[in-house]
Image (cartoon, rainbow, N blue to C red):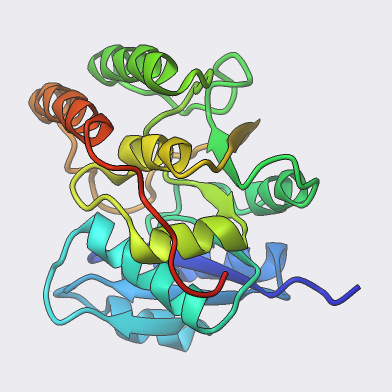
Length: 242
């Protein structure tokens, strides 16, 4: 059997300080994988640091946002015929050891996407999500259960593994505003499947998250509306090669 070609994608905005450890750990965990850093209009040395640590770099012309940046990476993976994409984050919060767990679950062939959940180990995988964010996550869990029938435990996780069908889907269609929960609904509407596996999240080593309590509430309200609006749209249709 031909080994699967794997691409690890990392959207990154001003993550020059976090990338050295993040990239080193990924290289050690999956040395066979290529790594693509999407430098989303950073004002620091994110692009140069990523290249110095052995990653391929896509430098966006300006800050396009997480959704557009991730879709660009899926388009790259689809164009260059990768079998598996793993989405990680440039801030180092996703433990790189989780990549092999995600890929192993994906390669069973049971699902098209495997999402890493910090909530499947009764809190052991979560470094400490704020109460406000937990309320929002629980609301999204319930709404996605109604819309898809799937028992999603971590609807805002940005850590996942994707097969060729999912790569093709997200290269053509990918939510730009609230990509994690919206992409779950998009998968369901496209007739693909998703499972979860336990992963561990770590605190950021450098910098601060932009998600405050007020932003968590604002995010939750807008993403609920976005999910309801997406549900009323036509189902996505794949075009071209898988």
